[in-house]
Image (tube, rainbow, N blue to C red):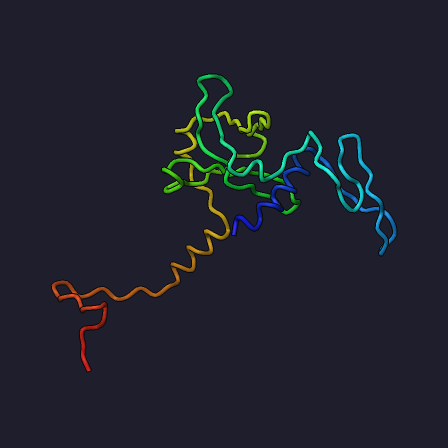
Length: 176
C-alpha cells in the first residue's frame, strides 16, 4: 500500500521542501500556459522539468541515513516513507532501523525539519545515534492500527482443558 503513495508523497515533498505553491490561472474550462517562477516552480497547469533545487521522492525512498557527515559517521537506517498532513505538507520522514536484510526492521518517524538531505552524496543526515533510533518507538500508521483492531476482533478458539489431549487436526475430538 505504501508503494502506491510514494509518487504522490514525492511530489508533495518536493513542493513543501522548497515552499512552492501551485496555482491555476485563467477562466474555468480553459488551460493557462505554465509559467516558471524564479525558483523554477510552475505556476500553470503543468510543470515541464525538474529544477536543480528540487528532489524526487523516488530519490528519497531507500536513501541511506547517516548520523553525521564526517569520516566517523555511520549508516543508521534508510528512508522508507514520507508522512504528509492534511495540508499536503511533508511532516515526517520514516526511517527503517534495526533488522537484517529488511527482516525485523521497524520504522521510526523523524520530523522533516530534523533531516538534512545531501543530494550530491545521496544521503540524509539526522542528529541521532543508531541506538537512539532503535530505542525510539515504532511509527504506527493508520493501516497498522486497522490491522491490529481487525486481529483483536477475530474470535479465538477456546483452549483445551488442562490435561485433555489435543484433538487431531485442530477439531473438537468428536466423530460422526
